[in-house]
Image 1 (cartoon, rainbow over the protein chains, first blue to last red):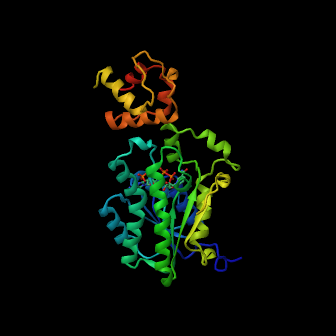
Image 2: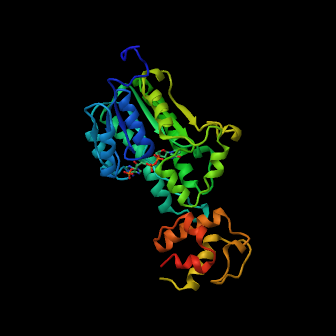
Image 3: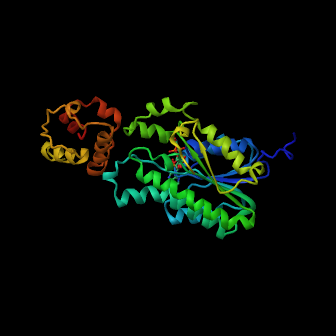
Length: 254
Length: 74
Ligand SMILES: NC(=O)c1ccc[n+]([C@@H]2O[C@H](COP(=O)([O-])OP(=O)(O)OC[C@H]3O[C@@H](n4cnc5c(N)ncnc54)[C@H](OP(=O)(O)O)[C@@H]3O)[C@@H](O)[C@H]2O)c1
């Protein structure tokens, strides 16, 4: 099948990926470039962002460092991103904090990066008419938005907030032919997960419960390619759980 | 830095013991009935919030007594 006929190809599409300096966002950027997309990548750490830029296939990619918990960073990125066919919000942070120790500053920190950043960036891009009709907006939520693992109240809340926001947004942009969806990954082998293990989380028991074991960033990247490509042109307001089979016995309703 | 008495007070608050326990520097963590993974997380967060110090689950595994925990502050 030629690239032009292949509905899964990203050739001719320009895609913005946040969180591209590490883990899942990094792999989404690399895989999208392999599928023919031109990338705009962003993250805070310039060194690791450059390393991702070097790993991208093909030419014409752009790297824009920005802290998306700051309005300045959001504006800068929306100003410089250029025309886009797809946006993947993969930036996010996670911290294990028992409920009795949560505070306004903890909630603010988590919500700034995980909820406000993707919503306000999308708003900034829409206001500047940066997203083409037929464009795809993809939020990386998390399985814990439903499953609420221990000591993740703020994180789980910040990620489930994306679900409602995405559904409403998708309704509003449908008339411009745009789509919005969430992917909710289970446990994926990344620096974030390593950090949680060191932060006292007991991860091994969870992996034992996952029929297909722990996921890799590639697994989220392949699903993202589907959501960005024309193959998913009839898919919107969708919340896609991607977890190696972990949550099936949990009776989770999206 | 706090003295060990002040540290023990913060430790007790972080674990949030439901049953009162007497804690000395020599108290063994594994002897505390309420010492579990959530309690350990509370201590990790307490180190961060109260002392600006990042400790990991590995550090906690190596600490046998309350005194060992206190020494992580050094
Ligand atoms: N790993 C998992 O098991 C898992 C499961 C479910 C969902 N997720 C979600 O998947 C996404 C990626 O996670 P990951 O595991 O790949 O984590 P990661 O390796 O820690 O990467 C997180 C990325 O987000 C960026 N970021 C965080 N806060 C930012 C901010 N304020 N402004 C700009 N960039 C920011 C980081 O940039 P710098 O490093 O440059 O600071 C980094 O590139 C997150 O949204 C996470 O919640 C992960």
